[in-house]
Image (cartoon, rainbow, N blue to C red; front, side, top):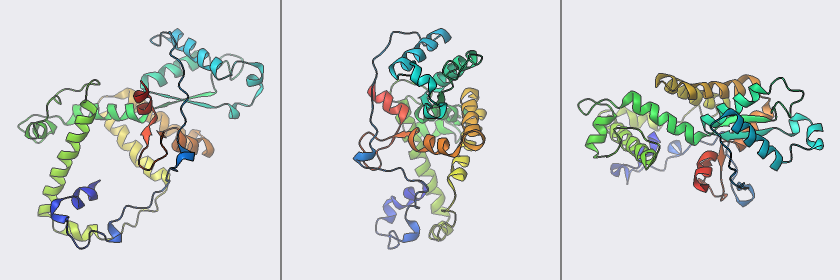
Length: 283
């Protein structure tokens, strides 16, 4: 993103080195496949009239989905747990309710009754919204200093003084952050001529492993949520770090990263969305 902000500036329209290989996008570490054969297939279930605001209600919902998935018959009970592990993805409230239900069933006789065949994971769309709320809380400032509010006033952006999960706050806030970043990056480059020389040097760190890249992302999100007082999502990040780094086997770790985070319903390039955002579109 930082490099694209510079290269998209009007001053670089006819720059002779714009097509230099050193400025090309780095090779993806783990590129998700595209094409119709890799398009995400959705099977939308009917709405059930069950209260998800209580632990008992969530227990009933899980039992209903188990019935629809065929996990209540004798054959399902006899199959190894490794063949029946199902990722249950949603917002933070969904994951915490599922953990509560699993905790209360921990002393049952088998893994089916203990709900151990379900793995709760938060969706990245809701995590992104939570991160935006944390950023807004920590960096809003006032119109007199150099916080976000100062930029919002200068950009004449309305409705960003308070956070909201309704309306266009998510998209308006993201757009305002990008425009603010563009202005500040370009201002820095106008007084730092050495930046152009450094940008043309090849990046020696492009061969970094997935774990390193994921580690940087998760640690940054952990500190962001903790610093912003969002301890629930900080806990979710810790749960994910525990699974990726210490608890899950390699095949489950790869499955979660490649299959459970992003969906592509068209199979086209650059058409990936977080699974919980796809569900929002269905609604």
